[in-house]
Image (cartoon, rainbow, N blue to C red):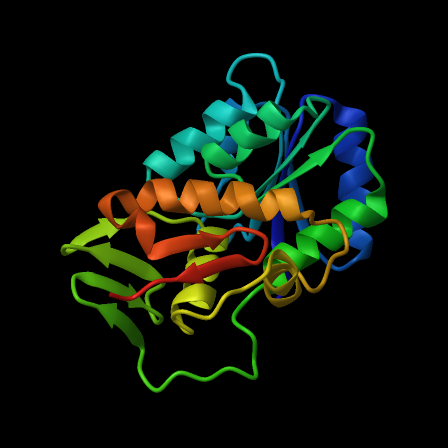
Amino acid sequence: MSHRILIVDDDKDICEILEINFANEGFDVTCAYSAEEALKKITADTSLILLDVMMGGMSGYKMAETLRKADNHTPIIFITAKDTENDMLTGFSVGGDDYISKPFSIKEVIARVKAVLKRGMPPTEKVSSNQLTFDNFCINLDTKELRIDDEKIALTKTEFELLVLLAKKPDRVFSREDIINKLWRETPYITERTIDVHIARLRKKLGNYSEMISNRSGFGYRFLVE
């Protein structure tokens, strides 16, 4: 079964170019020319959303925020002409999984989409249980859920995979390069700064447990178990 991609951009020419190229790659593609239209076209089979930020009416950021508040965690890649660090931070903070600046390379967009869709736990690593439990902190590997003090914490796909990577090997320090090689090994476009942004967003969601993800200055990140 092919992956289903929803492309959301008010520029019909961009939509057409992306649609043709992704269709040639074997994807099932749907286009929407506004966030409002896109919200009506999202289905349970939607694999990923390519989302423009600046559109008439609802912005891409607002659409992403709306989906996450509705507990919809379909991966989102923002495509936008807004390329400052603050723009990227905003994109990640509202639940984006990746961020591509215009003008973009079609090959880069396709590579990033494939990387997000293929990203999963490294096949060489095994776990003996479907849960990682640390007192009141429970990661369910089957349902892809995190519960803290029996309360479900909403994580994006990227955040969950990053948390599991660290939690499966408590006290091991993962360098930023390690993390990129584990979770983004299919694409060369991820920077170390991107890792820091994802870690910061994840720690914020952990609330009182944020210190379980520790930064070893100059080395990387580790998951602490006391």
